[in-house]
Amino acid sequence: MEQQGFGNFIFNFTITGLPQIFEPQAPPLEQALADFKLLSSHYGRKVMFWRFDPIIFSEITGEEHYINRFRGLAEELAPYAGRCIFSFAYFYRKVERALTVLKRETGVAAWEPEVARKRELAAHLAEIAGECGLSFEACCCGYLLKVPGVKQSHYVDGELVRELQEGKYQYALHPSREGCGCAESFDIGRYGSCKGGCVYCYAR
Image (cartoon, rainbow, N blue to C red; front, side, top):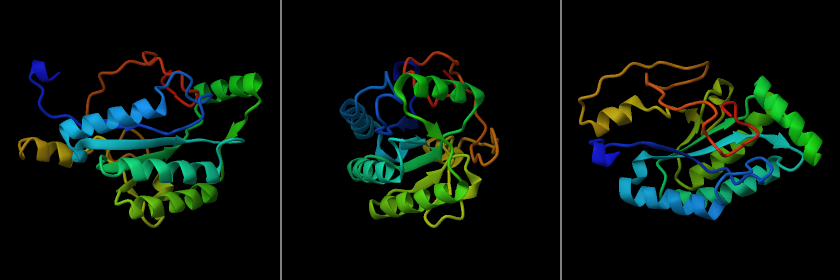
């Protein structure tokens, strides 16, 4: 991309540390962490957005799992990340079908918890993020914005792009769905192109 004249980049880099049954083809955690740090050392901490999402509740991934996993990842990634963006899983029909297959094949059931339970977990994670010096931002989860320490996410961050372009970039907010705080953008990706096979993904 740089050879084609592109000079500025912002990376939304997902690292969840979920059990492999949820992310069967995702890179090993150690590789993902090394890749994140390498990109950060080259492009700078400010443009590295660590995505800890989606949070999906199941028989093997409850509050204790997420608190412990998040603390370990936050302590390791904070020196390399500009912010942490998180969200809870959306149970679209495609996701529900994948989770039905998961339960049939592995016996592990996943579900959508009550909002109060999501807020309680978000508060715990926000506290850890604050201890690590990370901005903690909710993606399309407006019901979390009153939780102490949780901010509105802008993963397509118009202000940061404007800064990287030395003020030459003009933008307008263009939410893709309720609770979205992103600037207008064009998606050049394709549904069904990722080989990760994550069961929670709506774009498989």
